Image (cartoon, helix red, strand yellow):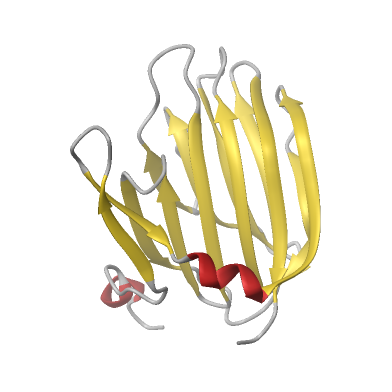
Length: 174
């Protein structure tokens, strides 16, 4: 894509729209997408303190769900990297971004101290859709992969963060 911003706001996944218990609109992917799930890996509790931790294997399509507890980390999140080690492509960041990198960063609203944030991500080659906190926030983005595989890692800077109930699926074609 010459200008990846032209794809921002494009919806590629069917979704369910409802009013949450808090009175706010929620958008979540329809349950029928679960039939696309293929090979999977689960991580029930991973503490990250400085050294990034990889999840899954190189893929071009994926679904990822995680609960992130920022703990005392200044920033933490999930990073998508080029599988050929060409560098970081995109990061979902809770807290203060480290800055100074060439990667694209999507800030995730930081939860109140002691609370967790739920992240649900779909990647289909070059398009990513992110659902935060049961669809309270939704973000479609271009992932500049050129259709090549990506790897996924969790990171925490300036302290430790806990990643729990993390599930990673490679998605099969529809």
